Amino acid sequence: MAVRGKAAALPRFVCAGSDQKVMFMNESVHPYPVGIGLRQPHYQVFRAMHPDVSFIEVHSENFFNPHDAATQVLASVRADYPVSLHGVGLSLGSACGIDPQHLEQLAALVARIDPVHISDHASFARAPWQQQSRVIHASDLLPVAFTQASLAIFCSNIQQVQERLRCPILLENLSTYLNFADRDFSEPAFFVELSRRTGCGLLLDVNNLMVNAINAPVASPLDAVCAWLDELFELAPAGLVGEIHLAGHSKQDGLVIDDHSTVVSADVWSAYVHAVRRFGPIPTLIEWDAQLPCLGILLDEAWQARTLMERHAAEAPFVHFSSHSQAGAIGMTSGAQS
Amino acid sequence: MIDPDASPCGNALSSAESSAESSAGVHAEKQRQQSLVAAIFSLYPPVEPSPDLRLLWQGQRWRDGIAAYRGNGLTHATAALRIQFPTVLVMLGEAAFDAVCARHWRTRPPEQGDLAKIGTAFAQTIAEVEELSAWPWLTDSARLDWAFWHVLFDPPVLPTPDDLQRLVNVDPAGLRIHLAAGTRLVQSAWPVLALRQLHRGPEIDVQALQAALQLSGECVWVWREDFEAWGVALPACEAAWINALQSCPSLDAAFDATPDEMDFSAWLHNAIRHGWIDRVQVL
Image (spheres, chains in turn red, blue):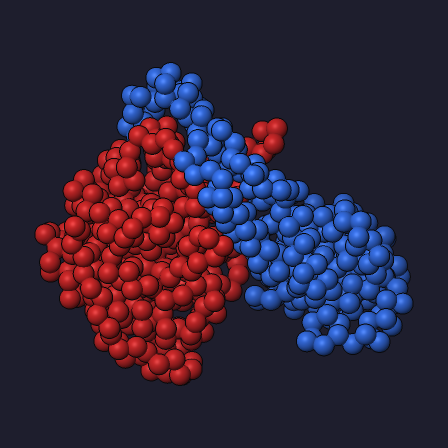
């Protein structure tokens, strides 16, 4: 039976409008770092509220244009908050390679923003189209099989990215709606081996694990997620997990979809507690992309994550802090290790 | 790109990479990825998965899974196109617009991970939809929407004092004006800017719309200023002047190709004020 925590009920924010006051502690350095995904409808209110979150995360591709207003907003926010750049389009698992133009745009953004983390997904999107005369991009996070060949593909692509960016990246585990019959690794073992070969870290998305477990389906999705985390814990070197994502999911047409459209579910909170007990106070982000609520709801979720982290992080067998990185300077655990 | 026949390079590649087994494995993954992408972009979803996908889930599980991916990618693309083509969206209505997006998605799949460019050939897609031929201004309206979107990707510029000095001091035969990258001239047989403005409000004034469609075509000058795109319908002489600046080898030749009624000093005043000129080159 997997060890897991119970998410206690916590006080909620009341969303009263854009002029509400945030009740977070005003600390720039926090040992329990939590952040939120910053999306365009919240730009104005976020800058006005100046909430006490440890970092913000944005989708890299939304800021590739160095000449638009969004980029100016991000530069302004960056003056006050560490920024994590989270990509959705690198297509690191593509056998036909990554798009060099995309990588250059990302490199330019990294140079402008100086992010604390750079991440993308363990997925592919680019593939030859029809007669292989051109490569297209599916604009989605398509699943990969955990085979030796996929590992070789990821290693090559990640190495190319890390050499260009001159820093390790984090790779996020995926929610998937297809299940491949062939595999050479379990999913945790795949990430551990990938990290061992390339130095990349893991962006642990607890909601994605839950979505996969529910869709599998298994008798107890929470037990399955905790078992996944336990296996990762057994195999992982210290510092492998550089960031945690939490989000909501919804049921659509026979499947649970990772659509980031609602609050974090009770089971995901419980799995998160389990992850904190295993890996310690890893920087944790609340993602919300569809049917975006008022900013206060996101901050409420972030507060819940911080409270749970504070309550349970001491139960982790070891906690690895980096003292030399910018992430360490704001209380984040180090991103990735080679 | 992974070359299955390539020798290992760097410490990220294992020794297995060089083996024939690994090469075959990479090739098989490539095939699998191509099959999945083909299933996502096909007109109708395959009832059963291709064998080279090597899936555990078949039947309804496959159909649910592939439907999720087909829906998700198209949803992302449609959301991007709705932002890029606000006029066409209102002209067509949401349902018809989404149907055109679906056609565009399947016939011109994106080539980049950044959907900012997905609308590059959207006007062509509209032109190819036979059912839309009764609304011939749609294609040019899409071109204008695209111009308004696309100029925001070009850097804002201002000519330097030296550029302006050259206009005063150098013979026009030895000069060329380079227009700013963030400018576009959209020429149409339809009053596309008037139509755009009539489709911006929550309510469409049908009478005004019918009256506008009787107007002659417009040459619309689109430019970025600060972080916004602006547009103005140009008189014929000014459109000719812009065309001449873009095509003539010198300023002198551009003057010659422009009708006499063109007010150059008024244009220059606006060009400097709005950032239409990138630089003045001495030939």
